[in-house]
Length: 121
Image (cartoon, rainbow, N blue to C red):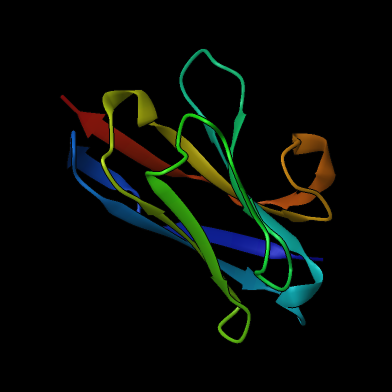
């Protein structure tokens, strides 16, 4: 069983930055690929970024490529999402997930409760 707790969300102006954190209660975090997804009101949950267990391979949605960076610290059992040049369209609840996969929701078995990110124009 893996428990995930996100933090770091909040209200930020367009062009600003935030760093989300996901703390995992797990014996060995490196066993899992970790992903970030987001869900805006009235929309489906969508992929944002993912990182393989070793941290050597990352994936990004086209909409965030070049602005967001995913990283992990397996020793601290924490995954991060660094978000720069934020846009109002980035407003959503952001979820951390753990599993075997990369860009699809179905590849993740464990989910956090989410953290709200609101970007004002």
